[in-house]
Structures are given as C-alpha cells and as structure tokens.
Image (spheres, each protein chain N blue to C red):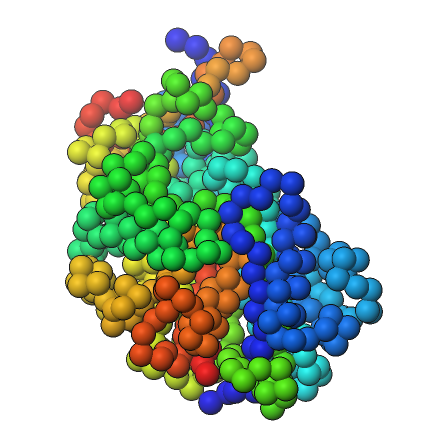
Length: 146
Length: 382
Ligand SMILES: [Zn+2]
C-alpha cells in the first residue's frame, strides 16, 4: 500500500489511525465552524479555539456528482471516460455543525436523509512522489469503510 | 407608494452564443436599443451604472457610445450585478442628484459550468481539489432537502423546465427556443441528483439596458412609463444555506431572498398578493420552485399543486418566468437581472407578443439569486 498523505494540513488530524476533522469553536458564543477559521460569523467575535469533531454523523442532505469537476481545481480523475460519479452530502456531526463531504457511495438507493455515517479516508490521486493523496469522506456506518 | 422613478426605455442584445462579438459590444447594442426605445440621445444621458462578470469593464463602452463625460460607475456584485446597477440608478434619481440615466449589464462566459475561483470566495484549495466546490452540488443538495421536507416530487421538476423551454420558444431574444418534452428533460444526463442536464441553465452571453428618469418627466419620452417601485439587494444571514459552504450551522434562518423580498415589498408598499406576474431566479428548476415560496407567492410545498394545475403558466393564475427564464435564456451574469426587468416592462406595456400575460397585468416582480448568497428584487408597476 502506498504511503498516504493528506490533501492539506490542518483539515483533519494527521498522522492518525482514526483521523478527525478539525474545527473551530467560538469562545464567545460556542458556534462551530469547519474548516478552522479565526472569526465567528454568528457573533462577529474573533476568538476561536481548535476542536476535533466526532467521527460519526447523520446525512442531512445529499446529491451525486454525475460529471467530472473541472480540473483544476479538482485533483481526482477528471477524464470523462474513466470518471466515476461520487456522492456529496452535508453530514451533521455531534449536533453542532454540518460538514460538506464526499460520500463513498454514489448509489441513490443507498443514500437516505438521516442515515448514520462514519468518517473514512478517500484516495484522490497519486502525487509525483508516489504518495497517495487522501481527502476525507463519509461512508454508511458499519459498512467497513471505503 | 414610491413612484418617483420610471423606466422609459428598454433594450436587449439577443442572449445565446455570439462568436466574434465581444461582451462590451453586446452591451453597446443593448444601450443603443434602449435609447432608441426611449427616444433619448446618448448625449442626454447624465449617468450610467454598468456591470459584467467576465465581459470587460462596462465604462469602456463610452469609447463606442460617445465620450460625453457622463458619470459612469462600474458595478460588480456577482449574480446581483444588474440588480445592484438598478438599485444605484434608482437612488441616483430618487435622491434628486440626476434626472435621467442608464443601467446596463452584459456578459460573455466560457462554455460549461462556471469554474470557481476559490481564493476570491475565501475558500481553501483542498475544498476544490476534493471535488466539492461546485455550484451544481449545492443546487442538488438544497433541492433534495427541500423535496424531503415539503413533498415536492421528481415529475414536478421536469414540468418546470418544460414550461421554460415552451415560453422561450415564444421569445425571439431567448437562446434555447426548442420546446422539449418532460420525458426528454427527465431522461437527459443526471448531473447532480435530482437535477438532470436540461434542468440547469448554462452560462451564456447577452446584454440588457434600461433608461430611467424622474417619474414626473417620463411622459416626455413615452406614453407608457413603467414605474420602478422598489429595488433591493440583500446578502446572507447567519444560518442560511448557501452555495460554496464547507459547513453549515445547525441553526437555520431565512436566506437573502426572503430578506430582499420583504425589503422590496416594504419599499413599494405592496405585498405578494398585489403582484400579477414574476420573473424568478431559475438557475435550475428547483430554484424556481423554492423561490416561489421564498418570495412570498405561496407556502412551502404548495408549489407541487400549483405547478400541476398550470398556475405558473403564462395563462395561469400567477405566471412565472414568462420569457423562459435563465433556463431558456442562459445566464450571462451581468445581464441576467436586467433581462428580467426588460421582460416585465414588455409585459406591463402589453408588448410581449405571443407570450403576453392576459388581462392587462399592472404589477410585476423580479428576483435574482447567486453566489455567495446574494439576492436582488425589483417591483414594477404601470
Ligand atoms: Zn461567536
């Protein structure tokens, strides 16, 4: 298995066997934001602290990306011949924030608002060093991941 | 009721694809047609607000229209560029600063879905690299949740697009003028569930311009002045669900459309029950459906019945997107909001030809929406 590297530093804990998304919590009003940001759009405050989000959540809404996104910025397979559709959804985590994420299934019959999900890593591409670049995704819970 | 500002001239450059014609030139054509419609000379125009997203700087059109020294201000406000130009023109006249001026918008976009400039949206690279930064995903997800919450069904989606292309077929300025069946729309490529290819509009090209003046001088130019009773633009509040959002708050609030709509009704001293027809942002079919309720024309979920009964057809109880909307016209961002106003002026003058709304409409409403969560609304009357 290729060495894995994250798509960016500071999006999820790394290195980690069970990475968690990194978010900000406003120290004034308790609002949560993802990814990490300094300023709070809820109370106009500018003091936040770093928090790790839970690895499970529920699907709040979803779609299926049916055509290759333009590259750049997309770093995955944008070849219309080999492109595989992927799911995209907002996942409600810990009842405090809804995070936009790739989903490991693109089958509409497997996707349902309210379903339980768990975080996994999703390979995007192999970089020039031969490392596998991964982003985060959510998979149906108890499916054994991607 | 606010009736201090009148629209006395309208002009459009055909929407669509125009190889070899620059965006600026399409704007110039729209202005010349609006001036001719009003019987106004360019040298008499005291000010202009103009904008374009990808078509170039609007104020450079003075080198084609004439170097008269007028006050020309460029406006850049995403999908609300036209609405913002109109708001600015309205206030320039209402304040007493000027008597007559122009609002103009035009655009010329590359083919295919809009490519998102992440940095200009304050977004990080990984968001786009991961395949998330697509407006089409937002539209699919907002609609999917809305259908779940309010009982809108998939067949209703195809009905909205079928109406758009049928109305567009009666509009010589529209881009897509071939009527399409519900089946053809529903069976086209699934781009972002539940939305298929023909349920989305495409970035396009075109121009639109309006000549506005003090209402008490309007009869100098036309026998049928149309009054601009309200023009409002609003940005998003905390808790609204908008495009290009790596996260959402769990707390929900109304989007900018609801706020812009309320502001416009207040300005005009009218309510949704007073409107005779509307042009609503239909980037995709779900947007038209959701915006019917967000602008106050029905309750959430009521659209299912209204559309089945044909109430939003040109001959229906409340016609929506009589010119084919963005679906049939495409979306040259800078021109799109002014295209809606152009259509409403035609409807209120009774000059809309094959697509004329019957029974002499007296009031008309426009609404635009776009990234990163901005809405613009106008109310016209005669
Ligand atoms: Zn706060």
